[in-house]
Each structure stands twice: as C-alpha cells, then as structure tokens.
Length: 338
Ligand SMILES: Nc1ncnc2c1ncn2[C@@H]1O[C@H](COP(=O)(O)OP(=O)(O)O)[C@@H](O)[C@H]1O
Ligand SMILES: [Mg+2]
Image 1 (cartoon, protein in one colour):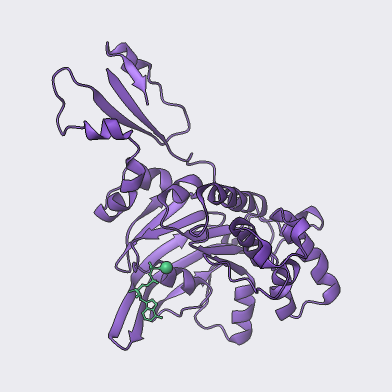
Image 2: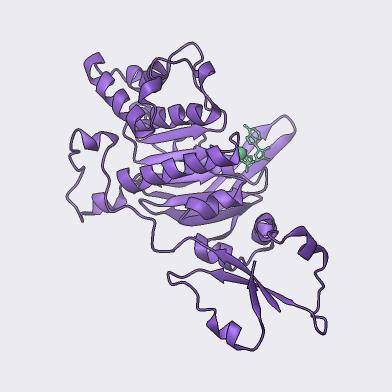
C-alpha cells in the first residue's frame, strides 16, 4: 500500500497587483501618479537593495547585521523575509523606511535612492510606507479613531479631510463599529486591524510587517493574512513581511528571501524555494512544515524501504493544474491518501 502526503503550494501566477488604487478608491478615484505603462508607474511600489551592509556599534564591539544584500522587490509583491533569530531580518526591513541607515550600499524606493533624503524627503518617504508591528504599538489613551487618525494629524492634514479617510480605513479592516472604543477593550486581532488601518490611512505604496501575526492565535492569524492579501489585491500595495511562521509565507507570499548571518542565502518565488529548497538554512527553517505525518506513522518510518512495507510519498504541487495521480494507482499498488 502506498500513502501519499499531499502538499499544495501557492499558485505562482496569483499574486501581483493589476494597478494601485487608494484605500479611498471606493469613494474617490485616485489620480494616477504617472500614465499607465510609463517608467515611473512601473517603479511605484518597488524596493531595491544594492549591496546593503549594516554594522551596529555596540558596547561589546561592532555587530555586522547585514552583509552586502542585493535584492529586488517588485511592485505588488507579497515578499517574505525569513531567517533565524538575529539573521538581520528587522535590520533589512528597517532600511526601507530608513529607521536604520545602511553602513554602505543603497536602498532605492520607487527606483529612487533614499540615502540622500533631507528631513522633508524622509517625512514624505515614510508617508508612502506603512508599518505594522508584533505588539501593535497603539496609544492606550486614544480611541481607535484617534489612533488611526494619528499619522494624518501629525502630517497636518486639515480636520475635515481626516474624518472620511479614517472612516474609510476602518471600513477596509472591518472595524467601523469600534471607532470610539479604546484599545484595551479590543482582542489581539482587532488591535492588529487598528494597526493596519493606521498604516493604510496615509495611502501608502508599501506596507512593512515585522512579525505582525506572531502575537496572534492561528485562527486570528489566518483572518489577518486574508486581510493583508485583500489589501494587496485591491489596493496594489507591495507588502514586505517578516515572520518565523513558515505557514504564513506559504499562505500569502509570492516571493521569499532567506537571510543567514546578514547575507542572502536563497531567494525566489515561494513555490520554487519551498518546493525545492537548496540551502541548508532554508531546509532547516522549513522542517516544521514537513512534519505533517500522523505520529503513529512517523514513529514507524525507516530510512530504507522494507520488504512488504509501505512507501510514503510526499508530492509537492507547484503548478496550476491539479496533479494526475491515476498513474500511481495504475502501477498495481493500492493508494491511500493521507
Ligand atoms: N540597535 C542595535 N545595536 C546593536 N546590535 C543590534 C541592534 N539591532 C540589531 N542588532 C544586532 O544585529 C543582528 C541582527 O538583528 P535583527 O536585524 O534584529 O535580526 P532579526 O530580526 O533577524 O532577528 C543581531 O545580532 C542583533 O543582535
Ligand atoms: Mg527581528
């Protein structure tokens, strides 16, 4: 008898945004920044790292967090960053909105280098890049509405323009009815929705997520991932996310990069990297995903086939079409799907 472990990966053709629309698109049409098909239009929402290195000075001496990272993130991608703790994931993400400045190399957002931006340029850049965090970073003394309004208030947006934008952002994340609630009365999932609404209210091109689902239970994680996917599809926002949960990457990412010791060790579309991981670090990180066997079967696994025993096959499906398993059944062995 043959048992099959069936593992389906994300369809390589599904991500990507047809074009950006603003969170307010349902109520107000966005004026495109550039004519469709023009150079500027194609670069909107892209990030490029060119030989980016980062060394921190600490009391214990210099720490090299990033080592000549070269990477291109296309517009409309949901791009995952994975690696062990301390691999440099947060450092890399934080160079995109310049919360960290690279020690050498450069970062280009929308095709333009951000290293020489003055204060005004930096403020404008950060308005185009939203960020959400593991611990939500909400202000406890402010209501949901005030928390979401904060980036607009700080930016000096006139009062009458703030209300509709906040309402629209809350509608997007499904929290219209919580506008006057304080964060302490919200669940973890609702708090993260407020964080997402606050990140979207400035109408960003790029959303950075640093372990945004790590404090949530599995069911809430799935709901937040659905929301992020919806935002990516409907608004065309590029999402760059860090997570230690490989299932999150498999669930929503189009592309992934694996960092180890501040270096890129593997990158590519998720269906390829997860389907045929090449680097030992990638294999180690993916190990939890491959432990899907029922415990009784796992306990009976042997390194070599025994006469009269079963073969357990893991079938990885990385294409669009459902695999044809009829050939297996026709080989004379009974097939049992696990
Ligand atoms: N502000 C800092 N000062 C000194 N060392 C830091 C600082 N931030 C991060 N590091 C170090 O840089 C390395 C990469 O950190 P980080 O980017 O946070 O990794 P990750 O997010 O993958 O866990 C680690 O060794 C970490 O201790
Ligand atoms: Mg980190």
